[in-house]
Amino acid sequence: MSASEGSVVENPVAFDDSHLQSAVELALEEAKTRGALASEAAASLSQGLSVNVRKGQIETVEHTRDRALVVSVYFGHRTGSASTSDYSPKAVRETVLAACSIAKWTEEDPCNGLADPERLCKAPVDLDLYHPWTPSVDEARDLATTCEARALSVDSRIVNSEGASVDAHQGSEVYGNSLGFFGRTRKSRQGISCSVIGSEDDSMQRDYWYSSARRFNDLDSAVEVGEKTARRTLRRLGARRVPTCRVPVLYEAPVASSLLGHFISAISGGALYRRASFLLDHLEEKIFPDFVRIHEQPLLVGAMGSAAFDGEGVATTPRDIVSSGVLKGYVLGSYSARRLGLETTGNAGGVHNLTIDPGTKSLEDMIKELKTGFLVTELIGFGINNVTGDYSRGAAGLWIENGEIAYPVEEVTVAGNLKDIFKNIVSVGNDVDTRKSTRCGSILVDGLTIAGE
Image (cartoon, rainbow, N blue to C red; front, side):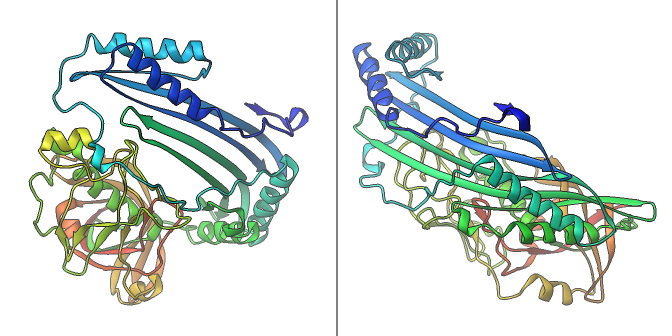
């Protein structure tokens, strides 16, 4: 729910997830009673506070509280799923009944079913992901106000604000299946963000920055976030277009992770078994230069993408996806693995702390080594063809001449093919962005087309 400042609910309902496992147990018991040969259920609860301030005044306060129970049943190779947000015994039983009824109408698929029992996580480890922070609305407002005030005070050219926000969220999920697996995951996430507008002559630009972490104490200070927001906005003033050309492109760390996202999409099970990927049948082939290693680190303590088991209860393990530039593995859950005649990689629900090993150079070092180039700081749109690998995205950033920032650039398009982009990576920076589940430094690609004037 959201509220104005005058009607704020200061004390949201206490976070109590003790009922999640009983809902899952009841769902599995009911599925067995109704004749399902196998079943699985996941019950989740999340709660959070988000306070947004603009020009020193509260604009919105949101207290969120969501819960869901998702049940899947298997009658041989037929499956049905249903969900509810009501955890009462009556609602749980009705949800299972709905899933069983759906299963009667689905086609048989020999790849349906629970994860292989030997792959299930036997003893989930505590990865230190749960550090709830429950600020009052006043505390969150004061932090957001401090952040915005700092951004507005950095330079007289910062003339307006789109607001600053403080967020505090926590969540819990219990997953269980009829093979006897039960696992609970608790996570927290806190954040501070800010966006401001700068003006110079006839040019107006906006930019933003944010800090995100599991623990409140691991966040950048509100002052630091505001300062960085202002600096990023100021460097965009006076932006221009450039003539169409082909130059080295340096992706700043926060946007460089998108290249890894496109790579993962191309090696994910759904795209592969549908034969809709430009990396189809590329296992054990060279995709990147020799120095590139891309791997998962699911068991990192306190990291944003850590998980002891995936969405099917399969144990996660550190593994190389790319080693010495060669594709060593796909990203699969149990269903897609069976479709491909392979085994699950523990990625039902996605990858966990996907990491490209950093080099030794800072972003500043990488800029200094460029005679001419384009530093991309923002990407716009999603012009990616996953079948062919064709890549075209709107971009803004900074033009580099003789190893220095020359001027800001806007309204251009960066285009190429992802196969060529991956092959032509020159270096990866040591400025690793750890705010997301993909951990990536800045990436320099040798030669992309910049479509401008």
